[in-house]
Image 1 (tube, rainbow, N blue to C red):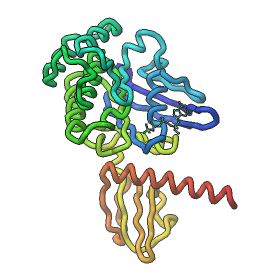
Image 2: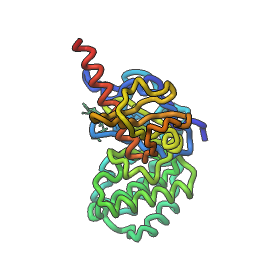
Image 3: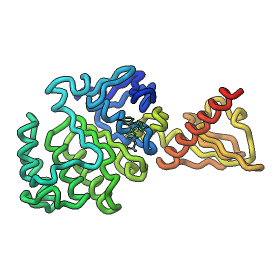
Length: 297
Ligand SMILES: Nc1ncnc2c1ncn2[C@@H]1O[C@H](COP(=O)(O)OP(=O)(O)OP(=O)(O)O)[C@@H](O)[C@H]1O
């Protein structure tokens, strides 16, 4: 395995005059389950399509597992991509999907695919068009896994599933990552889908990456401070303000710092992943408001 699963420098993609993704510089080490989270239209699918070579960059460059995305058969064999809405051929049976997969993929593991279908309680003769949304998603995941990829990319795999099917899907994905060694990059607009499975998080808002790091590191360095009203510029220089809100008497900050917080004025609490994502979304909105005000001045 290469040490970096995805490296991008100044990566950007435009549709017409509009940037769908811009100035994206990230380095994802191999062996992670990476959650790509952001609101609708943030640029998640664009990044995933650039990573799988379905789109060419307008700016910058991207390397996946040390090679150019979709640059030749060896590169294609290393990456599985499961598109949004888990596409399967409605008229084909599960067995026919497996046959097709075997024909198209040099590293295909038919035993792994059949075993997984059996464990899911599905019949090989079942037509894909007659499966439930959750079952279809599981079949699409099975096809992606049977390719024996080094990187599995999933674009909003659980968006259309009910909570139980969501959980079962994520559970299946987790089990597969434990059983076989590969990296995963999956997107969602809900952090709750990703919270239990991801150990690396990318927050994408309005076509820009806000943060891209291991979740453990993120959770260990971000805090919520609540206390008497204070301006952001009166916080120590090592405390980077991610978001701030104030009432007449009270201030609440989400900050990032590597140092302990000694100021007794603050009630200090840790954040969960959802709070963290919301804080970065807030930061983006505040940065945008500030930029608009500066242009207007
Ligand atoms: N084929 C296209 N032509 C023109 N604009 C596009 C095209 N595909 C995406 N866009 C635009 O690029 C931006 C990013 O879209 P993208 O699909 O990457 O977002 P997303 O984060 O995956 O959204 P969602 O959660 O809704 O799937 C959006 O403003 C979208 O309208």
